[in-house]
Image 1: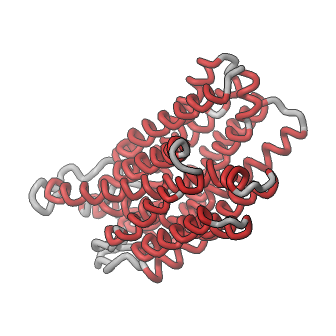
Image 2: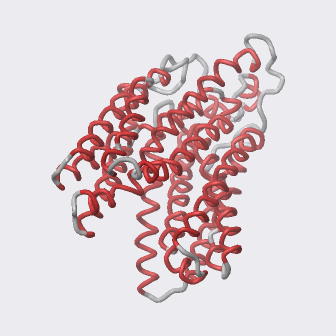
Length: 421
């Protein structure tokens, strides 16, 4: 069983790295693709929203399908779809072709995002301790790998279609080869578990309310991440007059502390609980953002962006994990709701900041993410455990974790406890 769990954890790391790498490979190919297709920055911005729309649809569909068929089927299938779709923008020669390609790529990314997070929840249950944040950290590692690979192939004179096609082929191979390591799951929810007060119908109303609260918090926290991604460099360049090279350190500081924080967040969550991670993390992020917004000095602003990343680092993984643990029979669907609304926040945040700059200076618009962090800190109690089997999240039930029992072949017993998500 321990060997199977280690293999499952390694496979989950693989899919998170794969997802980050695939998206990163597309990002580094945006400039040559824009030039080849012949679209303006404004049109490209609209096309990127189509990618986001495709991802949102994929997230909403993949969650329930993962609950029905099992993540062991949906995760590798989503990985193959997302990988294969990566080549499409490289093949596009007209604007409408690029628009369609980005919708398909976004759809594949959304399917992979939700299904791999649902499987990460399953791995976390089997381990009996927090492991979600480390998975999210490796997504960032995938982005770094893509940047390095993109720079190398650009220096070698590769065309976008050759670059994206090679990455797509490797992604398909990785998706297929990593699949055997995933945990086995029972297909379909426990449909016969009853409809009384102790059955799924009796538990549905409070669980649904809690999931939507988690989703709104994800929207706020990921809105903050989106603001940092798109506006941190411009803040130093336009408000503080930093050079282009110095301004780039604003996002670098944010991304570095975000990755390091996620590598540490699992241990902190096991020790202090997920509610503490969200409460104090959001509070630290609010302090960092305030310092960056009000600082007249570049070093202090860089420190503020770094603190902002450190504070936010553990927040999203805790929300995803709580959604997946809320109901074993609907883990995929619940993760899809939280991830979907959070993704909308990440897309909307930079746009809202842009609109606000028509009314107030850029640095003052950053008090919107400060307010979001404050709300997240105040409402962090929603993450307090409700009988979770994860260490640091509440009392451990007498029966073994559902995923562990399934690894021992006790499929019938697991289904009797409603453990097949």
